[in-house]
Length: 367
Image (tube, rainbow, N blue to C red; front, side, top):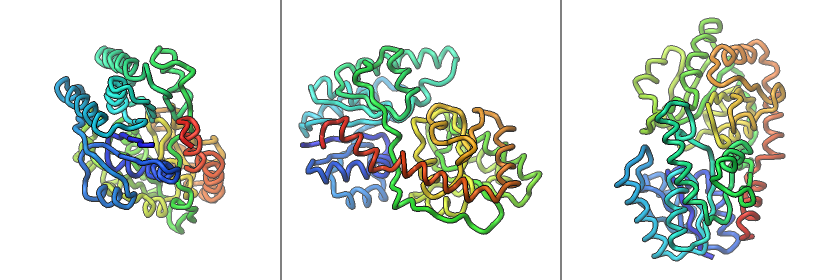
């Protein structure tokens, strides 16, 4: 069977779906990955996977009639040339335009909804119009889909309520999963308590709240450390590097990386104050390595924490409550080790990538 897998960013596609791609290959299927143009590190990763790759035109951010029509045409021609037996897509634009192209070519299509993104957030007039437009495009794209796979029940319920997808073809898996051997358990360092956030530089990831809370905590506990790791972004919600640098007296920004493990090893507590997620991979990776978590009660985030057991859940946008839980970990540092072990147990039971991928294969009926 020939499978095309689509993703918006090459690095995310080849990293987050690498284990799934390997499972496709182990089951004797041919895999063709497709996203925007490869960067040098992604070329190395693709070669290691041993799969075919084809770049497509994709304007990731904002609405562009000409650009989006070009993506639709590009995908349609790509599908015609490769004649796949099925297509799996994730990322808003590739689910939409990939779904419509697959529908035109009459190719079985599976959509992976990893989060609702910018289009479904906010209550302004412009945001509401955007939500209506994206909802309409999703309906068109997913009308003939074989299955739509969500990473949390809230996103699934919203799509069903809005009439975007039929409940019978809407499934849930517990995120993208994490390789528990690659992200193996690691003891916390014997240093002052340090906190870590890994994220693209986006406002709705809660970076400003993280910085504001860090400032509060540093004033009381000057030895506490706060690191931020993540790439710049070009979306409408992007935070400029100038703003990030303005936090330098209390946030240590490390730039982007292709391997977060060294940073997780150095931290004691992982923090993700996001406004919304599908199910955050970075949190699962930190949990797998034995780190307790502070996150929000947002959709997708709350699923990762058993409150008070492996971390804490705080309200979205609440700087004071976020800072309060950070201070709790500093004042109760003897609890970090135990809560970190609980994170690892949760991942092993629920979020192991092998468990997730077996469920994906079952839903796609390609075992």
